[in-house]
Length: 180
Image (cartoon, rainbow, N blue to C red):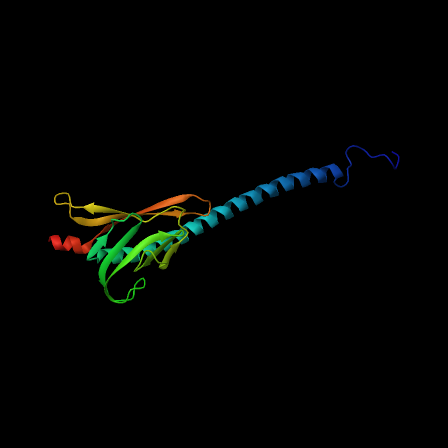
């Protein structure tokens, strides 16, 4: 056998073609892993944002519901705004302690509260859907039609421009207790 000729059974090392095939297979696998990572990261960000929004809404609605439950009077007659008259022991939405009326409304994609719905008011929740409003629908007694509670609805815009509607039913404690 001459020194320049190899036999078919005696191969040494990996050839260029094998290296290129291995590189292409590795790149395909790596691109799949990167796509999975990006998809999971996007889903994580979306769930974190939804959790923050739900936490903010839950906190704000908890405050609003507490205010409504102790209300001596509720004004839900004007679309887009809600007036709550009650005796409060702390400063709330720009009103000092005592009996006063506080309004809740949506303006500039924020839920606000204050003594005058035509003023700027305090911001309670930001990031509402464009054109959304605080909707308050009275829940009345089936026999004498007295006010027993409110159905509240609020739309929130998510980062992917989807809108989610949150519903709350609030029993007005003062109105129910007066019936007993």
